[in-house]
Amino acid sequence: MARNWRHYPMACALVGSLTACAASVRQAPVDFHPRAASMAAPRVAVLETVTIKLPTAYIRTVDKGSRWALAGQVPQGDVYRPVGTVFTIEGRQVHEAYLVVSQQAIVGFYLPGDRTYSALPTPVSLSLGDMQ
Image (cartoon, rainbow, N blue to C red):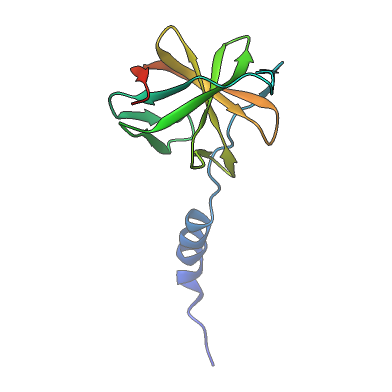
């Protein structure tokens, strides 16, 4: 059976584009200070939905009404973990992520599985309020 090899380069290009890898989530080691286990973690609710475009080109949404508990601090800000759910960010891999908030803005994410920090290129405003 004769093959038509002139289509081969085009097929390779198509397969290559379909298997191209996403960008990795940039991470840096960070000094995380968890809240003392004996202290009740303050809980807050998000007052307005926020959409975050990650440097990996993926988009994440922090929904209005979602609940977050103060988990600790990193040098970049306060670390909030989601209550009753898991929040992730995505690149080449999916990472569990906590919000890092400073001056009423999300400045990045603490990745508890890796014990690292992933910065956002531009802070994203965030309105937090007391849980009802």
